[in-house]
Length: 232
Image (cartoon, rainbow, N blue to C red; front, top):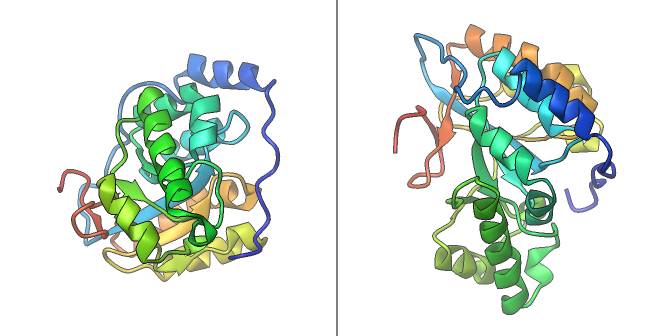
């Protein structure tokens, strides 16, 4: 994932679309989506690189309509720029994690730079109403002992993934759904909020998980694995 493309540029003039979604109750109804009555296991759906006015509202709407919850690994710079979208994630029943402030290669940064990337994101997410994150996903999945020591300083559990959807690399909707089908109980999949193919895959992801007797759960800070939403 070292050379994956960065997401498209965020528009600063798409507020009307956000407002329209809010007025319909699609984004900020304040109620968590329904959970399946019987779950044979739980998986962690994760979406990196948000939030934005361009992509977050549609993603949240799709997740809610299909009864899915997910962990949104937000970049601090975008949490600071779009605080309403952080709040919308919480209102839609999602969980919010730290994905660094500017998405650098942290293993190439100094200790003080790493500290700044993590601490500023903690502050930006909390200031936006997303709570204080307990989960951290390192950009590009790159980690080392220096980074883990800073994670520990801020009480963050490092979360990588078991399955990479490859949506950042142009994977088709079919390929993303196939990647989800490989998930087992407790496992986590990497996705991103900006690819159109990922958004299109959401209804089929819900059906695929249901067919396997799996539900979308939260990621436990204690174990780093997907668990029932009400579990520690």
